[in-house]
Image 1 (tube, one colour):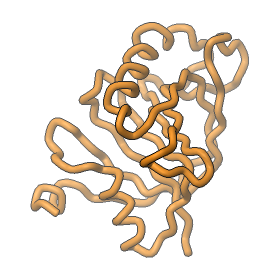
Image 2 (spheres, one colour):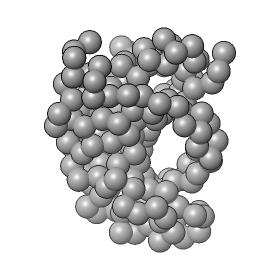
Image 3 (tube, rainbow, N blue to C red):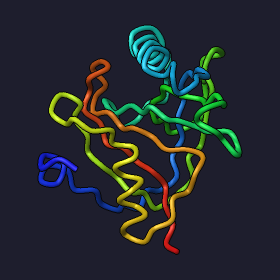
Image 4 (tube, rainbow, N blue to C red):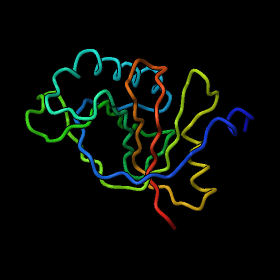
Length: 163
């Protein structure tokens, strides 16, 4: 680990209540994610976001990954959802989907791509294991305050449980 990582980034554990999101999604492979995900995020924030009527917690938005069961990062696609939090699923635009994220304990890490030179996902995963937590596989999300483009600062949330 670089000295910058050790001094600038301090993961922590937070409990988050369930919440509802509305947004759009794409399927992608790991080797395509650097093209498909920024394209989806940009399209959602410039062309779709204004259609969401029950939005809360603006300007916060979410980028969420959802892995299929027994996901293999070398051979399997995963879903990425660009979304915002809503207070209800009333008046959901027909070209968008909904998802309820259950209450969980999360390992969280604030990440700024303009100053951090590491991959936050394996870094946080290693921290989870090192601290004696068990990762809950299948999903996680990035929270933006607000989303401003592909180099936006975000807080990574990975669900965990105590062993």
